[in-house]
Image (cartoon, rainbow, N blue to C red; front, side, top):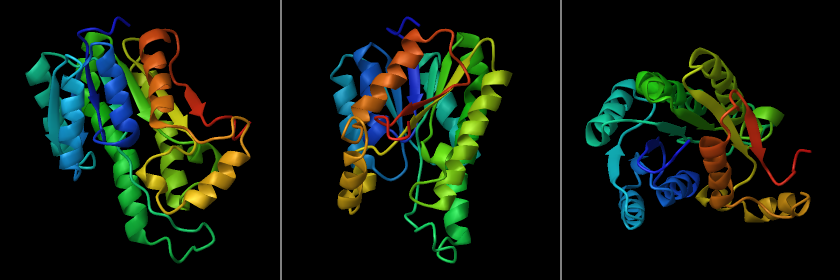
Length: 246
């Protein structure tokens, strides 16, 4: 895909992986919509970094778990830029609950993680589908190796990412041949999500072939490669975990 002049919507992109993906695309001349819920200060800083690269950037505050807000966000993107070529479903939430603590995994936790990580992904895909088909665009869903292993921050989180992987495969079928839909499944990534878990993360990293956890930029590079160069790849789940689960 020729990137310069394209338009991308990246959800949950004020910080972390989403920010890194947005900046990587901006470096290639892609105009951006940055989505956030609470991190307004960080979102505005990200907007400034993107615009410094010579592209346009729209900010949109809203929850992907709210279908009406999602539809407004997609329409605002099309109104601002005249098109939408790339959707990166990155927004996600988790709660750290030990897998053995079955009573601790409350209904509130289940509903929150499923609403954002599964319903939110689907809402964004549905709202953007017509324009992505029109532009013969591309969709990337940021999932997790937790969805493949059943491990991770909680049973609910792992289940949500397994569901997101299933949704990715379904969307790849129904949106073809115009739109490619793939999933990038990171392992542990050095973001604010791991605050307070540093010792545990260091032990896990030491046991991987590459001996470290991923940076957001590691994930962003793979996202870019699939969007820009992997023209005959769809419905795939690509792990970015340093060989942790070989």
